[in-house]
Amino acid sequence: MPELRQNFFTREWVIIATERAKRPKELARKQALKEPAEFVANCPFCLGNEDKTPPEVLRVPAHDGAWQVRIVANKFAALSRDAQPVRTIHRSRRAVGGFGVHDVIIETPNHAHTTALLDDAHVANVLRAYKSRYDELSQDPRIAHITIFKNHGLDAGTSLEHPHSQLIATPVISSQVRGRFQVALQHYDEFGECMFCQMINEELMEEERIVLATEHFVALEPFASPTPFATYIMPRRHMANFGDISAAEITDLARVLRKVLGKLYHGLGNPDFNYTLRSAPAESHGVRYFHWYVSIIPRLTRVAGFELGSGMFINTVPPESAAEFLRNTKMEIAVGSGE
Ligand SMILES: [Zn+2]
Ligand SMILES: [Zn+2]
Image (cartoon, rainbow, N blue to C red; front, top):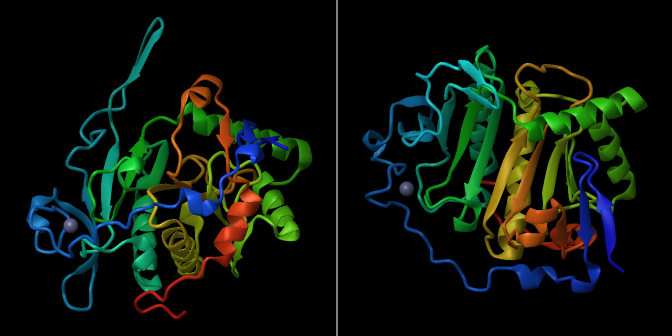
């Protein structure tokens, strides 16, 4: 029987449509992808093309004297560092000057790589680069919120094949983020505990939606998963902001992130996906009611009229089946990994 489930974090309803259930294999990419080249002459992110990007903000050097990770300003930035975040209110029309920071994190010099195929140490360096920028920008009083995200593949909104992620720091907090924050605060006031910590503990006890669990992180399919294979990676330790992550936790997160993406890569044929780091706004350091996590959304189905009109999603893969499928998907050995 189908079931309506309520998302614990957003309070939004989701229809888990078991009657229309699809087997995970039916959602997998049917045709093998064309192997990309390791170097593409006109790709601005490839090794040797460093002069084709805006100035570098950060570089993680490689052993051979080149680089492993670079952060540069986005050439087509959505917001400008030179604008002033000045607010204007004319009756119903409200605006803020387009101040903000838009970085590109070039994750590897190799055009053909993807996170699932990097080694753990390399993924850890990408995460350290995220943290370094996150920490620095959190100090800027003009910045209200920082979103770190990755678009992989055309259906996830990127046309640039070279592995990269992005960071956008905005002078305002969206009502979506505010809304979730309110739900979390209300839960804390009512029950005296972090709703995320509560959920992690419950899911670990029930086990059926767990993909994998390590010393510091838990990867799971949420109970009211809005789309097939939506996966959260949540730190076991309570932390409101991504910037609070410890050195040992970064090493562990790199392993977990690569493993989960590797399972999606091998199990579903390199699906397009987005991941985002959902962290508390910069101004809310150390709050007890919000808990950061990584949200991975594979783009296996399209958002259609019902979702747009009702705000409710129909998910044709129950999260319990998705978790079981991912638990059973074997990882091939990646370069340099200890598996
Ligand atoms: Zn490239
Ligand atoms: Zn918590």
